[in-house]
Image (cartoon, rainbow, N blue to C red; front, side, top):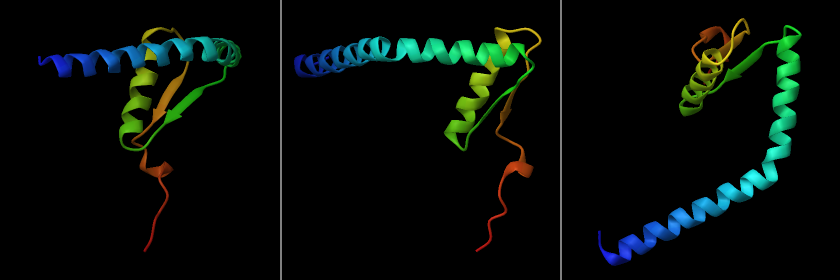
Length: 91
């Protein structure tokens, strides 16, 4: 790698680390509160439905799959391929 390219790569990684640290500092408490609320809702029989369009649909499916892999007996559903949920667009 050329010296200039290495310097640019290092700067990008340093900026990424700074953003990650700032996110941890600012988002830790809201994320903990969200997780606690979600847990409480699921324990009361609630469901988490995630959805998306295009790339977001893939994210929704992956997220639901991750949750399924880490839980037992809790309902998760990714609504990404259900045509009945899509609007009927007309020109």
